[in-house]
Amino acid sequence: MTERTESAVRLVILLAIGTMAGAAAFTHVHDLSVAHGQPHWIGWANAVAVELMAIYLGLELRARRRARRPVGLVAALLVAFALLSLAAQVAEAERSVWGWIVAAVPSLAFLALVKVVLSNAPATPPAPEPDQPQADWYDKPQPVEPPPAPVMPPASVMATTPMMPPASAPVRPPLGAVQPNRPQVVGIIR
Image 1 (tube, rainbow, N blue to C red):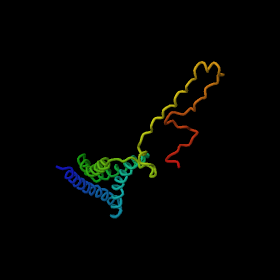
Image 2: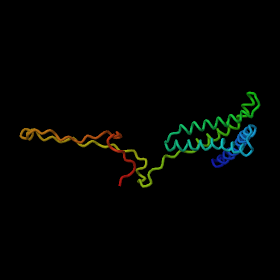
Image 3: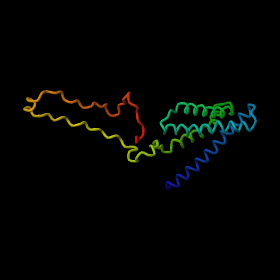
Image 4: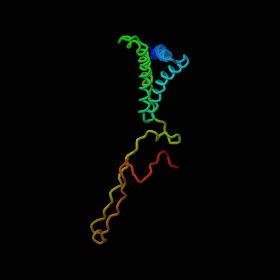
């Protein structure tokens, strides 16, 4: 099987599972909403909100990780909406262990599918500044060589010359050290 054929088969399976699991999960949330006094259109609105919010939060979580931004709130919301969806599936089930397991399958399949799809795409590094030269985008800083040691004059010259303390070289912090009294510059200064 060629890679292209395999990708097509995977896409068909992905769409089939996503469609069926999504339809079942939407229906369970809708039916539960209607059973508890909501009109049909609000039942569908609840289903859309609960199920699509989980997908959106998964995408947002991925985007925040790529941008190296905090993900705590988004991850907590994702868990909350996933549990809400799962609770709706189980609430509609027959009151038995097997009833709960079978009812949970669409929600779990849908969430697993979203997780697999979101974790499968390659992550890209954050975009560099647009006006920065491309060669500098991901280069590591080169180590700075220390200045050469001062050359001492011969002893005969030292005897006739008055002793002066050697000029001290400027003291620089090690590479990567932050100087608290200097603002940090980001980007290119022109």
